[in-house]
Structure formats: structure tokens, C-alpha cells
Image 1 (cartoon, rainbow, N blue to C red):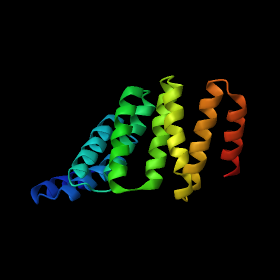
Image 2: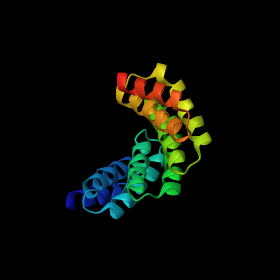
Image 3: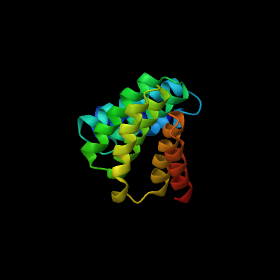
Length: 168
């Protein structure tokens, strides 16, 4: 952890936003297990720093912050930072992560009991499936659609997407 802070400070001294953002991301990952609150702050700092230079890793800082918000069941904050993550992945033109992030937005809306918005975002993610080759993301999207349809009582669709998730 000491070296992580040194890397952040050295990057600041040499005015390297990329170095500072990456160092903050790795430092946050090291902190996360024992100090989620501090890790959260460094994930956000990393993402905001990398976003200034339109670095493709910016979305990962936001995505990691979202993970902590979810653990704390802070759904409005989770939604806010998932949308920031989506913007960063769109800027990086990362189709797989765009699909995953759209799925994360849909999941968050499910947790907020806004099933129509959930379905809307999950359907957007579904439309990107032909362009990605990541079975974990594909299964995640199908599984989340199954949950959303189950929550709204549309059991035939829930069954269909559950079966698709299992088959991936």
C-alpha cells in the first residue's frame, strides 16, 4: 500500500494524469478488501482522473466504485456511477463493456423496482450480443433478463432467458 501512495504522489509530481489514474486504480484494488470506503474514494479519483484524458480505463474505476455501492445497497449512487461508467466505455468504444454496463444499469433499475427501465436497458444490452464474444457477459445479460421477467410475472420470458443463460 505504501508503494501505491508513492506511485500516486510521484505521478502528481511529474504531472502524469495517466500514471496518477492508474496508480489510484491499483491502490484502490489493494485497499478494497480491508477498507471499502477508502477504496471507493480512490476508484472514483482514478476514474475521474483517467476520464480527463479520455483514457479507456476510466470506466473500470467507475465500475469498481459501483461494485462497492452495490455491496452497501446504495442503489441511487450505483445508478449514477454506472451511467458514468457507460459514458466512459462508450468513449473507449468497448462494445463488450458497453453491453455489460447496460446490463448493470438494468440490474440497478430492477433493484429500484423500476422494471420498465430495467427491461429497456437490458434489451439494449441484448442487441449488442452479436458484436461481443464473452460468454460471461452474455450469460449475465440473459440471467438478468430472466430475473426481471420473473419479478414482473412474465414467466414464459423468464424461463426462456433463464434457459439461454444456462446454455451459454
